[in-house]
Length: 300
Image (tube, rainbow, N blue to C red; front, side):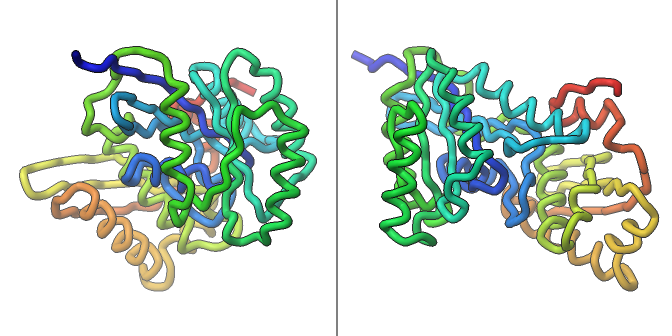
């Protein structure tokens, strides 16, 4: 007799830079969400799909939850909370290095109100904190929250990740799989390519500039062995454009080369990548950009 299929959605939530994207990439076994040391890298909900025995788990990588002030940032945080609404279970991630902050307490308190679905906690980056500090942190979280289980993990190294996978699978309801077994994500290749380029910008540019940038894939021409991609990098000021281009084009060349190598590895095809920098002061107020990322746009 063929075992019954199970399928469910798990929302991964947490404060910025808790390691959500790193974890989902590790769980899925491939890159579906970009990663950088900077906070608020993820801007929209991304679904990563993996199969554990007869269960298909759909992980939703959400933007970091923080006290947002501007419209674009508010839309990101709203997307994070909306990801919880459709989920069968919730996995909160906590950066062990940062420990328990006021914002952490507020997040746990809000998650306590989600009584109709199981909520788990993963304390991440345990390899960077002393054992007694970890034990104390876990006890504080357990006393404050209503967690089904608390995991101690290192998402980057993969420690404890298989335990999360098997435990979450046991809480997933019966249901037909929503995606083919080999599919890792619901993100389109055009959007993934734009995200890869944005990741390289985050890695190569300092301070606040990456947050003022939006990347959109304008052209995509694919053949058996070659993909020609053209992308626009939108910035808000002329001075930012000069920084992205760099001295004699050195920075944009480095960004393009790094993005191209990763895309070739991901697609298995030769990539011809053209990057253009455009000044668009109000790109954060453009409803089309919100739509591209699946964010809700509200006129101010």
